[in-house]
Every structure is written in C-alpha cells, then in structure tokens.
Image (cartoon, rainbow, N blue to C red):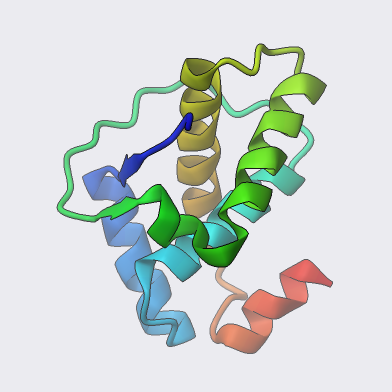
Length: 124
C-alpha cells in the first residue's frame, strides 16, 4: 500500500474548517475526497511544495477512501502515469499529498461553494 496514514497541514486544517461551516459536511474524509478529485480534475501538475504534517487531523487510508479506497488509489496512480511520473509507492504517496492539499486550497478559495449543492455542481 502506497498510503497508510494521512495527516494534513495546519493551513489545510483551517481551510477544511471553513469548508465544513460553509457546506455542512461534517467529516474530514468526505471533504478530503472532494478535494482530491477537484485537484485531479485540474490538468496541470501540482507544484512540488512542502506541506508539513503539523495538524491534528489524521486519518488512515481506509477512512479516507472508504469502500472506494482502491478507486482513489487507482486515480492517483493513473494521474502519475499521465504526468510522466513513476508509480512506486513513494511517488504515489507524494502526489496524493500534493493533490490533496491543492484540492483543499481550490475548494476553500471558491467562494461560490456555500453549501453541499454548490459543491455537487462542481462534479457536473
């Protein structure tokens, strides 16, 4: 398994708190799934910035992905291939973390997301 434990940065935690208030979505893992998919939908490669694991928001991969954990992993691996990267566990884990944090930033910056319905329109 490429990813076992997920810890987000303090900045991402604050962004998720704001998203929780705006959308009414209670669980970190659900918002993080949306964030991952939002970033994966962006055609550019996420910048290789450092995101310290310095918050108290932690979850296992199984909690993050739920019953679709294998699909989320496959999406990240496929994106690595598309971006010309290796699919070794370390690269997949790094790219997952970059996409997760970029996606959280994108969702937090999108002021049109005021509730779950607006979040769902992103998927359409």
